[in-house]
Length: 223
Ligand code: B12
Picture 1: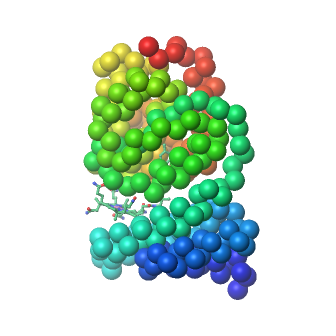
Picture 2: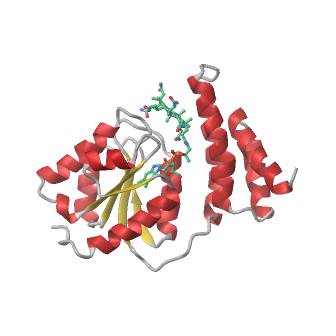
Picture 3: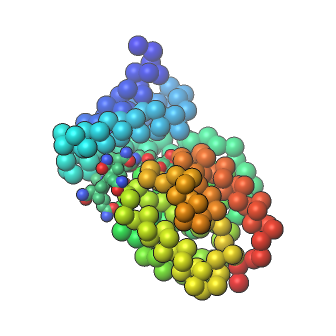
């Protein structure tokens, strides 16, 4: 097997087994071998996460297994993230990002953050399980052009709608662009939520964010 394939397989396997030490070693080997860091995350770690997800759905894995796998994935991505090569850009604008109320999934949001920062955005992370009103509070405080929300669970899509409604209620909806993403989201959901952009993954998210910036320039500034 080619060394590259071997390392990607080790990354995937270590996530499936929830082996933090092996995940770290494989991530370091990926960097040393010159494997593109984003490919290592997506074709290695995330591939393993899909296996984990399948096992969870078939009741072969349970919560403790998911937690171990998530820890292995986080350990590997922490090593890989600083090496993600995205075209560096001048400061594009500001983004407030968070995983919405009721949802604690963080791994995807962390990767999106790296891509947005690399694309030149000044990113303010509110963390996970962010109360709806925190998005509004932070947006009013730092006046970002974009408010980005992540969710991986179906019930918490509602939180995204609640956040957008809060902005509407305050009469400031038009001052911000809403970018949404996460495994349960889709372009159809974006339309239903009345958000401005959707990214299926981190690289698409950064591309869409740049497009939203162009549109934001034609919008009234947040008041
Ligand atoms: C790891 C994991 C966990 C870990 C999370 C650890 C952590 N620190 O994040 C733990 C074990 C804690 C966990 C908990 C739970 N989980 Co979970 N989890 C997963 C799993 C296996 C992988 C998620 C992951 O990290 N993927 C890898 C990353 C890289 O991918 P990603 O997050 O999708 O992100 C990419 C894109 O979606 C996109 N993206 C993400 N966010 C954003 C935002 C923007 C703005 C943009 C543009 C793009 C974008 O870009 C990212 C990078 O390319 C998924 C299965 C799956 N297939 O998604 C289940 C899954 C999401 N979990 C699920 C569930 C049900 C739960 C629990 C409710 C379980 C429980 N009974 O308690 C709890 C959640 C509790 C809560 N209140 O939130 C379900 C959700 C089902 C649903 N449709 O509602 C899934 C789908 C598993 C399943 N098949 O049932 N989970």
